[in-house]
Length: 390
Image: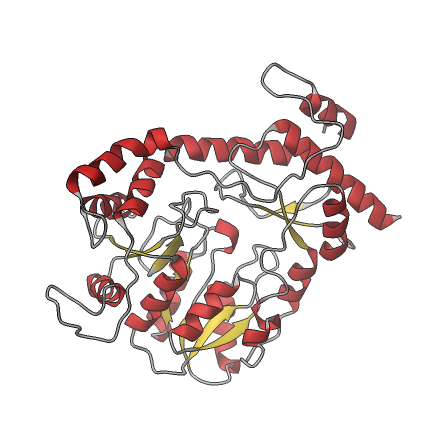
């Protein structure tokens, strides 16, 4: 294995394409989103101008949904929604579960998951995750049912930071128990390709494929897709009659234009994320941090979230990195259960969640992150860890 000095030399050797860092480094942001540029959008924007169709399921949105459905295979139905939180809320509502019923949710997730459960009229029951992959497993969920504080009618597994959940295992649990399973794959555009279970994907600007604000449901259940569609458009279904209480959560033609341009470039975008991931893996190879299994190799996502070495505290390392102009983010904080909005809801033992919250940190990452930036992050992280040991 190469020494830290050798890696630093390789990554910091100047070349003709990357300028040397300034003497006083500028802030390196934790996220640097990138959406399609005007040149890629222009053909789609011209189609909007020419057709003068701006919303309400126009030709671009229909084309965008069809291309998204192609990623999931034969029989897939895609319903776009104004954002993934609404997509999850409306999908849970469309399942017509008893109001107040328990919905099992990992506490280690972004608060949007819990907000959606509550907005759908369900009661979140926060449970723990596997410390190895940071996700709730079907086996653990099955074991937890016996200790539930009431009847569990739904579970929302979360694809942690974009990792692929065990779809086959979750499908088996649904078949065995009758409990509805909805996958929160907000950050998992790259790995979401099976819609045997209702799957929600985010199209936020910070995601690997984004439109600014947006999200979608992918499912092979035609009836569910129709019910969710109805809920996004005032309860209408083929005529201007509100058949059910609903909302307005449609995606516009402009958002679809961005999505189509992003899909056009997706193969290249994915390769660029892989390249940036390898820069980070090489630069951080001597720091004893832990990556999620498969990150940057088997799958890509738009963030770099790492587990710090034993004994290192995320809050302390975060402060030292910020002082070194390297911005960080503890994306999921202390877990949903620790937020005032959800403290009254029941929870199981959360030992792994609390350990992850204290040791996991998001580092600067972007589709165009280069080797020099990766080296700067690694060196700053090494200094921060050394200061903690001192």
